[in-house]
Length: 395
Image (cartoon, rainbow, N blue to C red; front, side, top):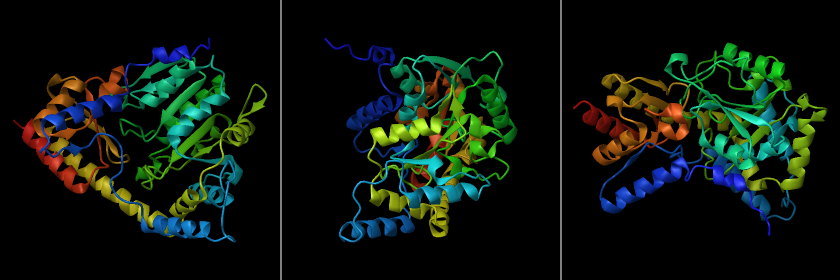
């Protein structure tokens, strides 16, 4: 009899966002006429920008013409898109060759798939609070999890410690869930640590387009030495509203080697073995994101979400509640009022103000007593949520 992967038994009973969905469903079944302000899951509310829509329509028309039809795409990405992404990096002073960029159907997929490159006996450092999938993907593989907690005392941006022993180092900046962003010197410390220890940084840059402070790095490859110790995973989901369209990309430098193995070559072999490439239509739409017109339009949309964040931050300022994030990220991480725990505050907001957020405890033990708001809702819902929050907590 075949033995299943028994490490699945080590996972928590249910996923954070599943629990939220079940609580929300139960509330609406009991209160069907209530309007909920959904500030929880990080799904976008604005449609794709015009430049992307036009490119998608043109690509569909291409598929109807024999002379322009495309079947299977290159497994690692269409050259026109890889070159467009390389140009995007170059504008920030990061020089990459197009073949160091691997196109995917999204960062979530890549965060799991990239683990194929590493021995299952390796260990993974998770800076908590953290996106739950980092933990779950490694638990499924049977890896040892090393947890590094963070808190208000370090702005939820911890420094490496010499006593840490871990092979994979997860860093997300801007961070999900805290919205905190590592400074250049802080990332330099992590890069130096990884090179010294022989570790690999898995750098999640899904929210880099929300950074408005020009002193803050958007990419790990803006840091000296990163090409010998880091992989960067990016997404167009929040940058360009591709949550339902699905496209991301992973950067694996050719200089990245461990134990005589070249990780760029390994990842190319993995992709050419395990994928048939992202569809032509989606890649054409994604390429439009990196045009001057596309960049202008997506930043107009990002501006809407940043205004939402400002509305929520102003409400918290009025209430005198501590928070971080919001300015350079689409997430606001707040301290729960009245010493409530995270799920207690979730239930309180849901039942008393009809606001959905995300309990901090779901991102790790040190998230207990904190709560995450997303700025991806509609401006109308965001303003209403802010007003409800003030009315509820000023009592």
